[in-house]
Amino acid sequence: MFKKLFGKGNEASKDIKIYAPMTGEYVKVEDIPDPVFAQKMMGDGFGVKPTEGKVVSPIDGVVDNVFPTKHAIGLKADNGLEVLVHIGLDTVQLNGEGFETLVESGDRVSVGDDLVTFDLDYINQNAKSIISPVIMTNFAEQVDTHEIHEEPALTKGQTLVVDVTVK
Image (cartoon, rainbow, N blue to C red; front, side, top):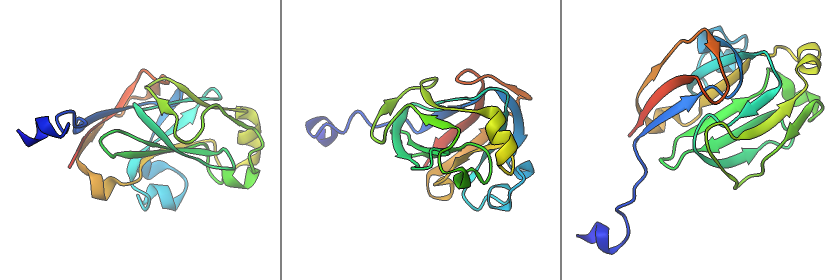
């Protein structure tokens, strides 16, 4: 009764699907050539070896953080799950060169909405790796169960990669 009175009846679903934010090749999180990501120090997830320079939203939610160097975007689902899309490795050192952000913090996004474009060749030549981690950064605090679908070929905004149930 109180839920109806105080508008708490529209709680966010505990289940969420994370789709591929980039078109390319699936990479297991353990195979990302950076120990911070491979050892899951930032959370669990997966990587993408992109074949084109476009990033779309992997979830429905809000843009939580657009890094000033444009190399990463933090998203937050309505149920509290936080997802980081990090383009390439050691790309913070590029100081935004080769990246164009298409959203701002606070923007509401849906799966498949454009977030960032980037120069794939430039990143490939100037960064440690083009492999791009997609990490649930509040994994330990928020995730109850998850299942990663290891699809070898990913299509941005279309290939389902992770089913998650939050606590």
